[in-house]
Image (cartoon, rainbow, N blue to C red; front, side, top):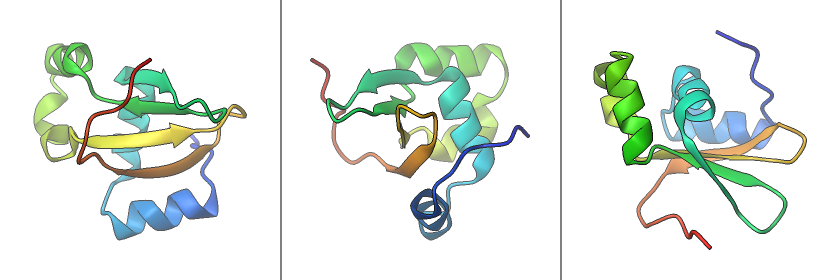
Length: 91
């Protein structure tokens, strides 16, 4: 496991939402990033990321968390994490 730069808010949200650090690492490594127009980037698993996870044989371990997202600040610090219940705006 690499050293994730997490804010206290992100740590609290990971615990509250039962998202393990391995999922956040996979989001940052495999997930698609979209700018949030507030200086951060939203990382999530899109179809291409899910295919990469499948090729790496990681999809079964992360299957419960394919709806997860992480918001990363411009400094590289993870601000928050959660489960998506609507689409990520892309423009």
